[in-house]
Image (cartoon, rainbow, N blue to C red; front, top):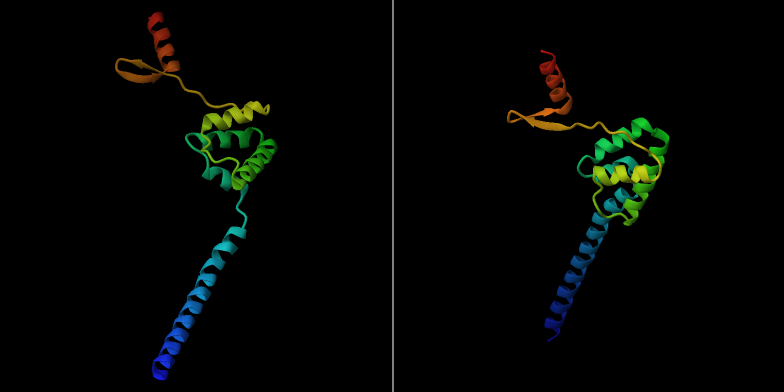
Length: 136
């Protein structure tokens, strides 16, 4: 029986050593991810990851028209995104409404297309062609 006991103790010691190696390996694997999360991202990059359809276009126009104010808004939005208070995707319309609600009237390039002869043409082209037809 003492031979069985010594073999059992040897297996226990071997298993304990394996478990300790696994624990130390897991600690090493999790440390790089912790240090990566400590690296702070640029607030603009954090916001761009959460922008949807036409969001980057609105942000670019806001930055060119109101650079100082937009920087403050971007920093606050990035803070809210990282804290988890904003979880939804911000599309261009929502971002534009946000800027306008705080008093920044961001001007966006607008195009109106109309159908003419089965093709979509800009309204200005249609009106100019109509006025040239009338003058003939």
